[in-house]
View 1 (cartoon, rainbow, N blue to C red):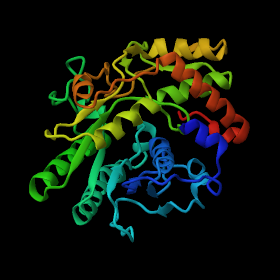
View 2: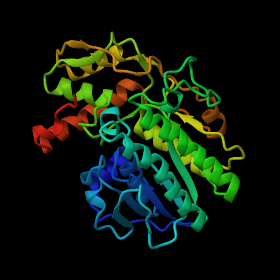
View 3: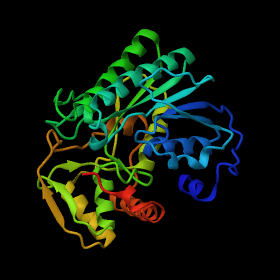
View 4: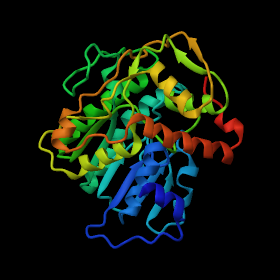
Length: 345
């Protein structure tokens, strides 16, 4: 439905059905990869959407078809600073924060502030409006894990002052704030620990492994693999991830424990590179580079809690998701200047 909506509707022409229990939903980071697709989903389901984004990593092109929609409101603002929405909100999805190392390492202090101050400002609004609030946490809270798969009870192995710490520790601090606001003020919270997600509408220049590999292959370049490519990742297609997030916000939850959201299928980075080469028919080779500091050696979610509580598990196999993502990126190459698709070093 989402893809059909993107292809066949403009913001001016889309007719929203009447929905019982229509909500006003705030999505911080709403112009980003995940946020923009969630904006589209919520509009299709008949809700009013307020999208708040500073466009540091979000892209206005992701939401340009919504700008004149009567049920959509865009606020250009940084979540580090307090904000006023101007209307009561029923639900908040706090997605604002750069998620790829090349992006969040540009200004690590601002990244940490985005996680911490962004959480406080969103929680204060949830407290004032009695809104249910979702926090986009991350598998990075587990750091370079010593056990696999990683269950929610694992406390992680994080370097508090390494190059990834601004993101890892910022998200851990945000989880603490969410729990404290629940304990002290009764704020209705949901926390999802998101594992590697990919799909159409990723920023081609965001520096994450899937977008890097696809764009390098499509541009006829060799694929950059760090180390020997034996570090593992679990890749979850965006539609599966958003299904889980929406389910998490719907179902009654007694426990406040964060829930892992990801695909437990585990692949080495080298295997991913080989799949992308095969699917793009590029004939690219592999260029090996030194492994970055604190790069996790293994990443695989234990999703037993999500399966039990949310009745959810991912459906899209990696190769199917890669095909859809490759097709989208080919379209991006036609629409955008080549400079915008340069791979982040």
